[in-house]
Length: 115
Image 1: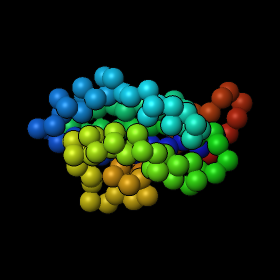
Image 2 (image 1 turned 90 degrees about the vertical axis):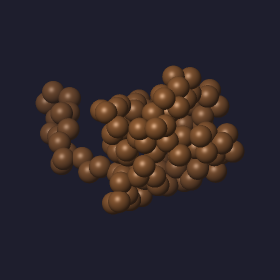
Image 3 (image 1 turned 45 degrees about the horizontal axis):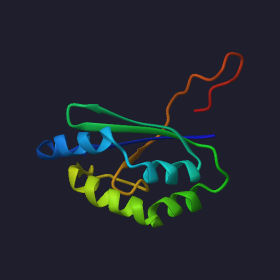
Image 4 (image 1 turned 180 degrees about the vertical axis):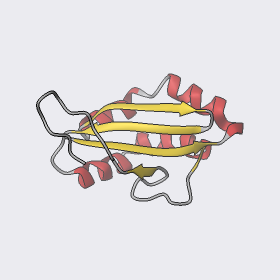
């Protein structure tokens, strides 16, 4: 399983819009994420900084992420959410979002934590 953490800023003037959208995420968007082997997806907020975490349990991460990006309903969703976000200047492969490197993970008892 692959763990992904990402961050982005939330535009203060669009905060209410973003929070309202995520209070009722479209079922088709969620279904697309499930089909792409995305699990345990959460978005957290600290003031106007968003932090996202999800787990990927598929076999072809790039193909599954491309399938999400190609989904017409997800594209419509992003047209609503993207204007609410302000990317960091160092965004990477996460599109709008900046990927964060994992520096530590508490594994199950008796296993070594990858770093």
